[in-house]
Image (cartoon, rainbow, N blue to C red):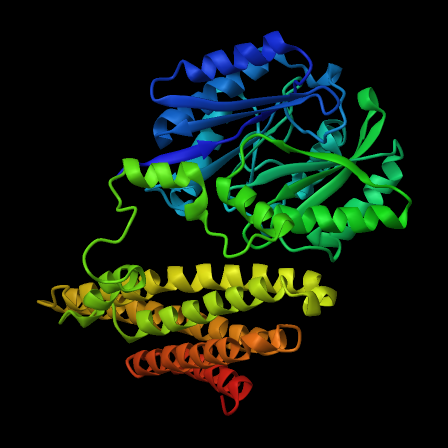
Length: 507
């Protein structure tokens, strides 16, 4: 399997193209590294360079970029609208294929230590690589920026770096290294130069101020364009998509007599994020990613069948492989995976009901609520679909633990510990399915009040499937709890099951 990661180092230089060229050149010279994108912004005075490739090669490229930035960028002479603490301000590692977030955490920690060893630039760790809870959020580390942090680190032990001496590099400051999911840097420009309005909007939408989950934002003054900007980071675009953020910015701007004049993406964006936005704004009927030309072409080039083969209809052909897998005389996929599939089907039916209902004139007053419901159902379907494999993998881990040797006392002890750990996992995964399915069941009930009457039977089927998925998953939790020796933990999970059953009621 390929091992691919992405790294998106942010450098405090967005006005001198020659310096950015030099940064790109030194990083792209590492064999096996691909520079996918580069973005410069003069107002922010910042550039963002996107690298991808094998983990070790990308790590070395990032390290060389830090070294080149040390040569080229002097923070004592740097000004710009974007907060920064370092010449190389941020170095995040993102898993793409064959690599876990834990792998990226280990890589980030190693790179952080190497930055200090090679260049004597102190390092802070953030997001998944953070060593302290208060440093998970980047804004906490950046508080005061280079100038403020430079003074505070001398007297405040809590602000000292994770790696290196308790002082910043005189010209390069500090570098923040981390591991995270894919992040979309998304900015909305307003038809006003009043940055105060942008700040108010940013406060309203960011999660830390009670706004949208997975949103970080701030107001920025774009002096060169006489505009104010709401600068946004989306840390999970599937949970909080771009179109939802844009709509909220638009509504908040109206409160102050302003409006968006455009938006921009900094760096790269997953195709799925744009597909979701297109579906929302265009209100496409029965839209599927398979309708995108590039997706279809990629499937053809990979050898995947474009049309169902054989005498079966196309829908039977789609489900046949999974039915055959369930029917096999093997332990997985079993009841837990089938429960997750039932919940996924319920969410898919909910998508259909919401999507078709928002096309009906009679439901015109509910278009916004139906669109929100469509997003929620889409996320639920994705989560439940992933749980099909997660449940099978959890039980496979149990089987692997039982196969461990138990010749002497130590081997027996290790085997029992592995079995207990695996059984915990086999209980936690279906518990997550049960929780998601119960929430889905409730949301489907709420959808009944705003959906078209003609869709009532489909909605009823969806609720029955959600309830079946929830109850099936709970049965899988129960059977695994019987094998756990930690009585307090078992009691805790049984309490959660009781609460879920109460929420389901007689469904």
